[in-house]
Length: 308
Image (cartoon, rainbow, N blue to C red; front, top):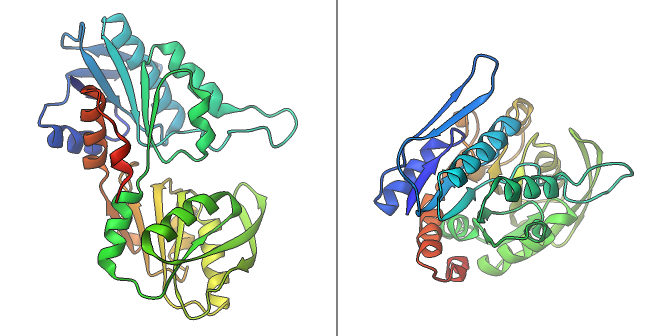
């Protein structure tokens, strides 16, 4: 087994390699003067089981293209099996046609990965569960909930209600409520634009409780901040948030710094810049991914990793 990393999230890859007690593979990723990506696998990988760790986070197009080129280089170097380890799957929000004449880009990315030569995909918390079906190769889909729930249990949050900030996250919120023995509520919302959300209704008993808002990703912070303000209007006490992928843009920091949220728990699936500006707790998923990689390599079941 050999572990390689692209340039998207090297600290996470180093953490995974450390837990597996193997060094990261030797790979050179450079740029031509015009910006084209050049890749060279420095060591021999003929007949090896190789894993390439590369979340397709911002800059999304650069990291996705880099991943595709690395996969092609590995295929042409005669690797026995190539697994793309994608802690964050970019373009996952475009998973269906919700308007006329729009693409299903999540499916396009799946096709590109398969065409490049990947043998299987290891991902974590897809934006939509059906993305697994976009691939005609094996997909191991992990959840960050075991890591996050362990932290939340240590916090000993009393009289807790888990809140989904939109109808699409209801299944995720229900799973967290079961694991934390908590109540369940939902914030119904209406999106004005990709950057602006209007929250308008809370369904569930939240009066006087501690709220935990759960979601798979946060970009501008509009959904999370709107839900937090609405919950405060309905008499909620402390508000915590648990988000797997911290896809923060600049306006997210500005919004969240003014939001009535006590703690924001995120994972290191994406490199987080300037986390000191917010009450953020970053949990590492390196151990979870390392265990999954080891089990895939030895052809063992990964289903036990879903248990808390």
